[in-house]
Length: 210
Image 1: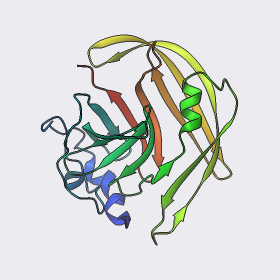
Image 2: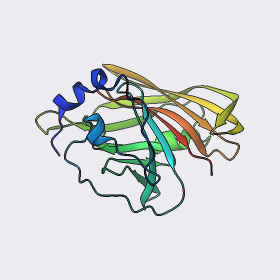
Image 3: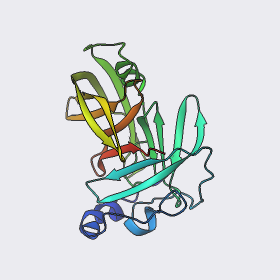
Image 4: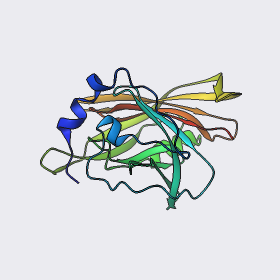
């Protein structure tokens, strides 16, 4: 897939006044309205369950509610009406398609183990992949660790829950980012703030309570 950097780079200026989309059948269209879609098919999603995921991209001023359309190897693929897809493993972002500077893949196994309480404050690797403007793949490698864990009351929709707030810091020789995860008592990921790419910035996710 060829990335459309010229379209995504104009998004912040064009989107300042367009922060919310109307729900359409449980999902929303991001691509045509925000200029985010690269070469992804505009295929309406066929939800495989009632769950919904609210996602926002603060840097480009976009948000949508997605439906699950596939599950494979413990990962869930979520989709908007216009074909943008996000893949999560136990709530941890592993891939995006249609956002412009997409996260092509990410090894989330260390993060999943950390969130499950198996690694403590130990370091673990994270290797991600991106396509550059010439369709060449680059593989930035990070060392990550849990940097902080606290307990907070948060609202998920209209429901107040007690949540563990866990910060994850990931560092490479030339880049550093921090992800934040909020988990309920069963360690289900209810809310997150996860790094996507330099162009897209962080993605904020929240489970829609039904």
